[in-house]
Length: 71
Image (cartoon, rainbow, N blue to C red; front, side):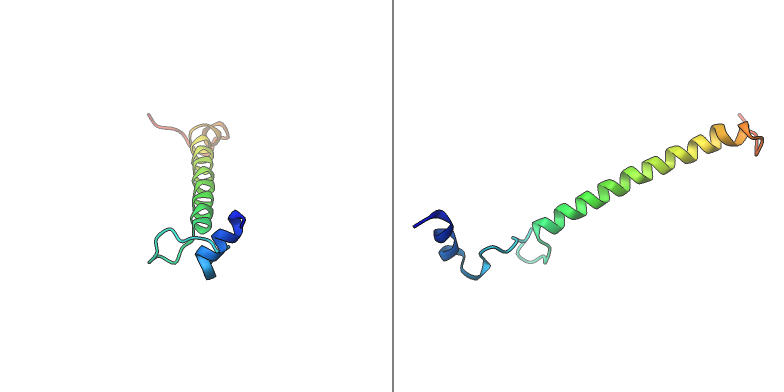
């Protein structure tokens, strides 16, 4: 008997399904990994927007005479 058949007979109905992070939380490991991927991407987008905003306030706005930076 091969390993896959042995695993299938041991797991029964749950064979081939994603495992949950915790038995009482209805979130699978794949969904958890997708959540981490999306939040990491969102964090990098936020960091990029913050840098663009800072550069606009500190350098671009005063260069075009939109406002003056007060020290």
